[in-house]
Amino acid sequence: MLRHYQDAAEARPDAFIRYEYTKLLDASRAAIAKYVHAPPSTCVFVPNATTGINIVLRNLVYAPGDVIVCFATIYGACEKTVEYIAETTPAESHKIEYRYPVSDEHLCSAFERAVTTIRAQGKTPRLAVFDTIVSLPGVRMPFERLTALCKRHRVLSCIDGAHGVGHVPLDLAALDPDFFVSNCHKWLLVPRGCALFYVPERNQHLMRSTLPTSHGFAPWPKEGAQAINNPLPPSGKSDFVTNFEFVGTVDNSAYLCIPAAIEWRGRLSWQGRSGEEAVMAYTRYLSREVGRRVAGALGTEVMENAEATLGECNLSNVRLPLSYAEVAGGDHGEAIKIAQWIAKVFVEEYNTFMAIIFYDEAWW
Image (cartoon, rainbow, N blue to C red; front, side, top):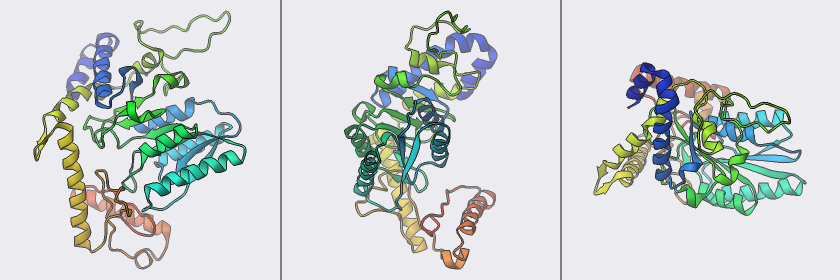
């Protein structure tokens, strides 16, 4: 499907981009909206989760005392974006520190304590950024509980669901986050790069610009100013949808593959299950079983908390039987170099790849 749409765009660029593409994009938006149980009016696409998080952080207007709350395991590029916002706007950042394995209750309590502390300082916890599934280490966060806590404490919730769609069941209407972004080119098996960006209608006025700003941007009206020319055909869709419909001349063919990916997954079966239930049951089984076997072979363990909630996903973290003191001499920088070396050897000598992380004085 990807090659088909790329060929169609190259064969007749203007006809495709101006007229055919928008209809296909609407079909993809409808398909992903049904998949995550959300209205199509709330779903648009961006190239990846990092772009979506940037759009949220860079669109919000901050006042002195506003604080962006994040967690110790926030994705590195997103943390750097938070710090950039703290450097260039009145906003401040507050990171909740911890070391896995910790319980879901620990994370939720730590979040509530952070909100209380920030307010006690006379500041405003404006936005909280947290994951569905953390990537390094690969663990599930209690994102449902954290979203509910954000509502209770009047904090905007911004969920980095990079590993969400196609990985865990999602009902965005029930979850009701303020902002949610999730890569479709990971667990949903859509070609790169394609991510769902969900914004409920109550918050769409806050997301005024795409990244970069598109032809669909609507500037504030100025007395005597003429309308800025938009060369694209007029649209009867909402400002939010129109804004994200065409963001410069790039290859968005992956966006159009959503219906085919969902349809294909619906035909799969495993152990009496079918469709998404089969896919998620199989991948969860595979992750846990392989993690258990590898840890057994190495004589180590899989990272898990007492409640066994960290592993409620398709990722397992197996500790390698290496001594930090003996192998790296207790040098953190050297330990990072060793992790990078291991990953490179996997690729160059074994034609495979596994993420290697040095975490809490151990390699995983």
